[in-house]
Amino acid sequence: MDTVADTQVQTEKRRTLPKPRISLAFAPALGKRNLLIAVALFVAGVLSLWIFQKAFHLSHLGVSSTPYFVYQAQSFLHGHWDLPLSPKRTDIVLIHGKSYIVYPPMPAVVLMPFVAIWGLKTSDILLTVICSALNLSLLFLVLEQARENGFTRRVWMENVCICVLLWYGSISLWLSLGGRMWFTAHIVCMTFTLLALLAALRRHYALAALLLGCAFFARATVIFGYLFLFYLAWQDAHPEPHIERFLASLWRRKPAWTTIPWRRLLPAFVVLAGVLAIFMWRNTMLFGSPLDSGYNVLIAQHYSEVTTGPFNISYVPANIVANFFSFPQTLFSGPFDRHPVLNVMNSGTAVSVFVTTPLFLFLFWRNRTFSATRTVLWITLGLMVIAILLFHASGWFQFGARYLFDAYPFAFLLLALTDARVDWRFAALGYFGVLINILGAYQFWTTITPHL
Image 1 (cartoon, one colour):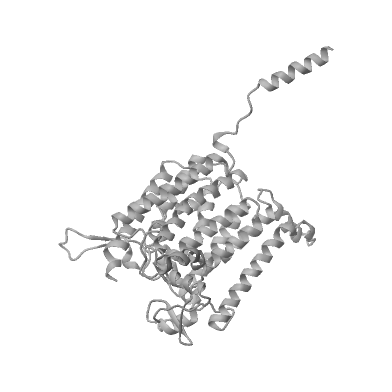
Image 2: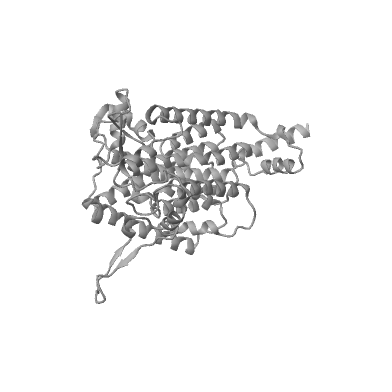
């Protein structure tokens, strides 16, 4: 009887004890708190971009000067690829008497429902703003998911600071303000890339592969992101050395093929195969070759000065300088000029990625321990950078090195996974990046671009 009574007393005590609460610092990645923070970041992003647009005298709801994706969306709705545009316009190619753009079509696909309602008045500027603000929220959720998976121990306030400083303190700000085909493609690509990273970190590998395929159909450079996706699938989103054990088995010449997680990898491989098949079908149908995405035609019709094709090792030295060692200029009209002009854009050629995003210097921070995840991220970034350095142009008229922007989601994640502390040095570099990007965006959209 005493035992029964004791059991009842213990049961009553357990009922009266307060329920354990999840720490505010380490709540679930997609929990209520984080989703509210993501919504707040999205609203703040949209409002701040509208403020910048007003300050720079840019339209909020208008159509940009190169709304080619709006025209492409209209063409898709009518069942064809060609556009009703003159081949004399920038980056329009003429094939069999019809006009086409060579750029991948995903932004046009996103625009299709809106073009079906509003037609050619659909604002590519507004789409760019919405996707850019969404990128700020998605980046926060990706970093929180990486924390939940054990890849980082940063609290949510640190992740918010990192996201805000990287979003305002990078060329994302400049790319987000005025629409235009090339810039919209970069922003849409980042949206799908961040969605893919979030899905992969949540162990939805087939969905992640599909989303990364959507990013690939906005900017082809992100194809190398599949390496990191497959790594996560292999590791099953846990920081355990599964791959290291397999590589060690290869070193011992006794490959442990049975340790490969085929059930997780195979769906993602199937999706990737489908993405590449669609890509090659589109190239063959429009440009006559499965491996020609249209740049050979573009060069032949518009850029006769390019004589060694779209990709060549001879472009590497100039691209290294443009992407990493090109800096803003201070221009003097003469030896007695007391009012020099600060040319933040460096005449529109390029500005070093470490100037426009100085927080990337922390990528080289010395970490206390080895991380296979960071290593694979470095390899992924390296492959993207190599592809960009081999390309025939550095990004045309621009502020910053925009071709590198397609690798930014992976660089942002890598930065968060380093041991660098969010302290006064981090904040100082971040604020410097914000200042530089506001000045660069202002100069691009107000003092130079209107006269082009």
